[in-house]
Length: 398
Image (tube, rainbow, N blue to C red; front, top):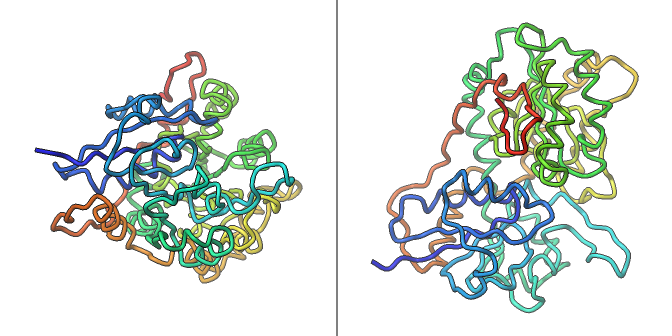
């Protein structure tokens, strides 16, 4: 039986997680064979191990240009000019949050993911489809690459839909994480870069240890979500070496392959920056306290810019407990829900829309069942990630 071949182009762990959500829509179809490839990328060092743990079929990048495929999926533009297949290009995070500002002779300025160089890496060909989460992106595309409007599909956001559906299991997620009755979970979310939460980690984590009584018997539990690019950029061994001392105080640091979404749902407070995870936090009932914002880097038309004007910002002086209490007292659920509504204009419909698009490009009829939004699985206990061994290059959290 002939099968359609689908190529998943995996640059980073972040991209891999988004693509796996999409590929799950093809999982039960014997007419489709999925293979993976790993182009060179500055933050791609963790990808081979990630794919090896999936036991996936991987084609070496140097061999990809000599083969053709029926569909290619990618969440980043690097190297795609060498791929011989109809391409569906996707965003890899919430909305399009990052603005590129540079000199005339530097990288193309604009919103990352919506620049002409992102959409047409070879400068000539449009993808078969450009997936965006919200109709708001159409105005930006009309300015940056108007010809791309003809292939743009407003499909939705898979992380938004999985988090929104998972809110009904919040109590179950808290129990699975080992949050006792009366304990409060503080989730620290960091994107990557010098102005991220991780860029301020040396000042922040000592406050979490010293001011929030933690551990299994304490009033607070703390979980840290560090962007996979941090792990790849510095090296997993180095990140664990830096953070292992905090694990001894009961602070749990999720590894890059862990599913952060159920942990975010379980949070009582979120301390975050201008990244996607903090923005997804607006879907939850947790008040948000910002570590700061990179105004130069934030797309001013994005919901992240609205969040930066809404959530209070962490101050170096008042006690952290008092600042969390202030964030809770100022929290307006309707205000945060309005920001969350800007993540996607197709809430709850990503899986239906995305499957319809993929099968159209593949030239196949869709399977005769509704691709619903699956509930997130129960996470392991936070204690799983409370110790970060730093001795071996390939070690995982105990």
